[in-house]
Length: 460
Image (cartoon, rainbow, N blue to C red; front, side, top):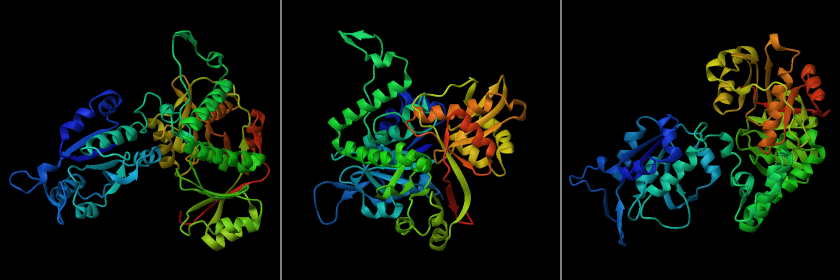
């Protein structure tokens, strides 16, 4: 990812990025930080970039011309997303960091003095973002804060991508207490559960500690978390029918639009999938009326709603699926141990064996670190992955290795991955795929009898 930083102090940006994880990410070519000196673009012969404000008032204002010309210089003929760091902006958050991390290039504009001429900000379409309710001498420090927060979400930047998923503020909880060696320090011992080797109990302890800490330090976050947990608990009463919504809520990617008991409308913020859980036509139609007319994809679990969805949104059923769920807390045993992230150089093999036109989607899953291969020596014996919406699947086993432990090992690997990430392990199985139903039931997953429907626009 490339950050263009428009600044009056480019050396401050260079020095701030020349350390630690960010420096290593730049050396690997995962991140590029390009400071652009606004003074290089002024037409004033003495290099001046500021002037007095019209209407009077204290302080100087950065002029429109050098700011706009610097912005045009870095953007060229591209329309790049541009952030102006200012205490007058929307508050920067982990959710915004995730959103910005999806960009290939980002422009960050650093103000000084009393700010920047409003006309330049309007002309470049700058989004005003603040890192907090306080005032600094310039935008460089906030820019570096945002660069750091965004960069660490880019695959490969952290030593373990899981680090970005299990930290404070994920799922509206602050991070649990952590301990390292020695086992006893100043008479204080590491909690016994962390030494037990029981991963289920460790996860449970960590969740409870996160809840306690959040409730005490950030009651506002805790209330949001509690509302979400109450809804999950309600939907869990029919877990095999509501798995797609439950997982989205557990991973905190669901924006709940409306919830009346177990009748729920939500949008997956990662995929823009709209989702309805209902068991009543009147309630379903009410939820449907809240879905935007330009919706491209809607998932639901109530067959009588299909006709109304077509009438109101023009969406038609593309897939009808069973849902299989893993309801236990213990990790599943894995017979075949050599399972690793899938290499991009072997994309052609996966695309050829998974399905027509699957190449771009699989490439996206590999890039996201959500696609895995089982190896026999140097040979790929099979692969699996996590779909963009969170369901487990993309499973394929090379004919040479069928009727071995490869298929069940890959499926178990994904189940364990979902558990470790705090999600709800589930898969969608097309109703015609009897072999997959049998395999998952044999592994201990429960397959629901009530199907779900993926509805799409014909041209999508």
